[in-house]
Length: 177
Image 1: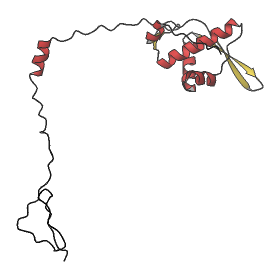
Image 2: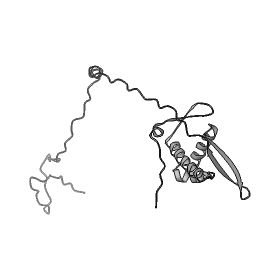
Image 3: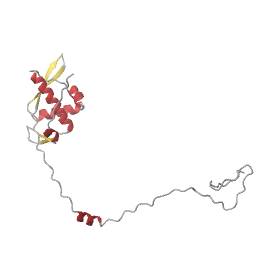
Image 4: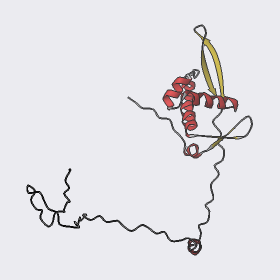
């Protein structure tokens, strides 16, 4: 079986916005939008190479891209509104409709604005800044020792109880009566 792949160019991966052909505004380009565009463009190219209309329904697009149907509808609506896609609806089998899509133009990406790195503060400035803070005092480590019970007076043991050795803890014996 021969696998097919959808290619995503690096500039497209790095893009965060696309340009509306109708208004010129820059629109946010999410990861889901990128996956949808690459998949839909690949399908469109496949059908047009065979001289056919592209007619995948929105449920199938959602299934193959891992997006929700509402995300697919939203993105197709944006592409249509901003001049990248035309949607043609035709009637099939009585009252059922089928959508055919035509991609009018490649998605135009907004230029990526490179963030200018902020200069790092000098070590001296960092030390001066820290000098105003009070030191953090951590609690003293707690150690656990065997409890030693020292009776205040000698305890008389019941004759059936044998005396304990010195290394075992001493217990106070009380009567229940």
